Length: 100
Image 1: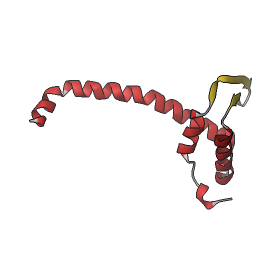
Image 2: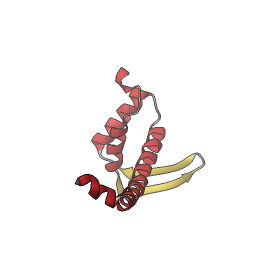
Image 3: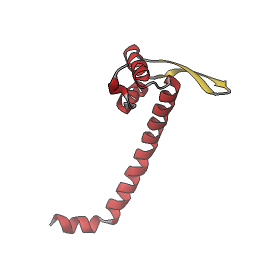
Image 4: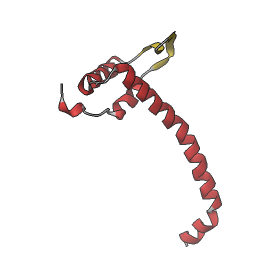
């Protein structure tokens, strides 16, 4: 086991999520959670599995964390942009004065 895998590399899991083929998902109920089946890029899956081995984390735990991170990122960005636009609109006059 490599010593470089002491923490989860979220960039690799984000890349993994971007490679999921969501058009071919299959989901079943399980008392412990959902069991999913999907098509994943082979290279990405091997990287994800290797990271799991290096960090001694379960694939399901890492996948759940990666999915939650992905959902949070997708939901946060539109909210952030809305607040940024509102702030810029509210401070438009101040921006003009500072630009002079």
